[in-house]
Length: 538
Ligand SMILES: *[C@@H]1O[C@H](CO)[C@@H](O)[C@H](O)[C@H]1NC(C)=O
Ligand SMILES: *[C@@H]1O[C@H](CO)[C@@H](O)[C@H](O)[C@H]1NC(C)=O
Ligand SMILES: *[C@@H]1O[C@H](CO)[C@@H](O)[C@H](O)[C@H]1NC(C)=O
Ligand SMILES: *[C@@H]1O[C@H](CO)[C@@H](O)[C@H](O)[C@H]1NC(C)=O
Ligand SMILES: *[C@@H]1O[C@H](CO)[C@@H](O)[C@H](O)[C@H]1NC(C)=O
Ligand SMILES: *[C@@H]1O[C@H](CO)[C@@H](O)[C@H](O)[C@H]1NC(C)=O
Ligand SMILES: *[C@@H]1O[C@H](CO)[C@@H](O)[C@H](O)[C@H]1NC(C)=O
Image (cartoon, rainbow, N blue to C red; front, side, top):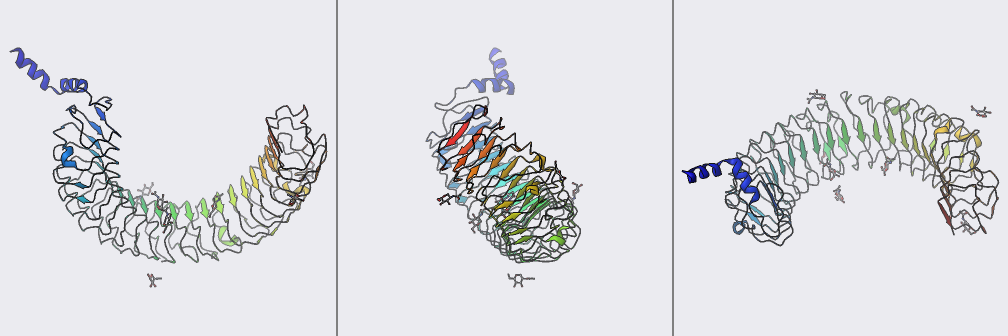
């Protein structure tokens, strides 16, 4: 009688759980509740005895190579098995036959070359399968047959050059599929036909040259598609027809020279479009209105000119990246329609001058980069209208002179970078009376012979002021009186021969003063520089 009660008691799952959790932990492993972790131990087979109630078994970083000899016996409660970074070479029909409750299987970074046709046949509850970084070149069309609960499949970094027809058939719960870093050169028609829950499809770093019109049929939930680092040359009208939910499309690092006028026609929710590092001579034509498009990257193309109407159908862009192209002028007319622009990057274009009102109408722009262009002349009114601007990058140009009023209307300006120019002269009014908000000013590597007087009034918020590598010979008394809140002052390699005793007078908050590589004799900070923490000297 008693033995019967005990038997019944022990068969109860709750009791089994309790007894299971006090079962001994295999030597050398750690056993948090319901978990056995035996990582980086050089194991060639599963440790024994394994508590039968284990739910999570982690054997990452061991030397398993033959799953037959690993022999996972009946572990009915196992939900997660992690065998990453081992030397497993093949998965056979029986490898996982005894652990059919598995939900998550991690096999990343092994040497798996062979996956038996029925390897996962019994894992009907499997939700996540990670097979990335192996040597898989072929998957039988039945490999995932009946695994209809799969949500995530990673097959990246293998040698998969073709997708067998029917491979993904029936996986209508799949949400994420990663096929990046393989050798796919084409996608069969309807390859992803049944994947109506898929939201992320990663196909970057393959050899795709061409995409069939029906390649993406069925992907009605897809929000993110990555086709970067392939060999695409054309984007024609059909590609996106079947992707009504698409939000992020990455086509970077291809050889795209042509984009059909209707290419982005049927993607009403497209928000981010990456076309950087291709061979485009002009921006894509947006035939249909795309009020949702916020981000457009065209950096690293061969764009010489932008038609005036180029952005008419994408009026809500807030980031436009045009760096490293061949523009010789600011594309002023085309920019007048993108009034919500917040970030504009025109760096590394051969733009040689900034005419007046170059950015007219961009009253929401916060960040403007004109770094490493070839700008020589800047109109005093070049930046007029940029009422919200916070950061301007003009470093790496050939600007000799900054006229009065250049930055005068920028009420919210935070940082101006003029490093690496040929500035000899900055007119007193260049920063106007309104740049009170300026915090950081970079004027290194210019030809300034004296400390420029920045504004007509004070610049009470300037914290960081870099004047290094200018041929400033002497610093007179109160040279920095108009910037009383400086914290960092850089005067490295400035060939100073004379510094007035009261040069830094009034800089009561200065913390760092860089006077390295000056020829100036001796310098003893005055007691008034009470906050000075770092003095670089010699
Ligand atoms: C898309 O592919 C590119 C190129 O390999 C990569 O840099 C980027 O991180 C990928 N994006 C996503 C979301 O995976
Ligand atoms: C894209 O491919 C090129 C070689 O074709 C490589 O140099 C580059 O690192 C790749 N980019 C990414 C993000 O993988
Ligand atoms: C598309 O690319 C092919 C070369 O791959 C080229 O022959 C064809 O003219 C291109 N189509 C268009 C419309 O430019
Ligand atoms: C587009 O986005 C809106 C708002 O997020 C959403 O309601 C709509 O269903 C999306 N359209 C498609 C086709 O996914
Ligand atoms: C502008 O684009 C260039 C490359 O095109 C990039 O290196 C740089 O970081 C970008 N600058 C800003 C401020 O975004
Ligand atoms: C700037 O301020 C100075 C004195 O504070 C004043 O004389 C000058 O007219 C002002 N200039 C402008 C453009 O407001
Ligand atoms: C400082 O003087 C040296 C020697 O005269 C010269 O080579 C160097 O270019 C000068 N540095 C600057 C920033 O003018």
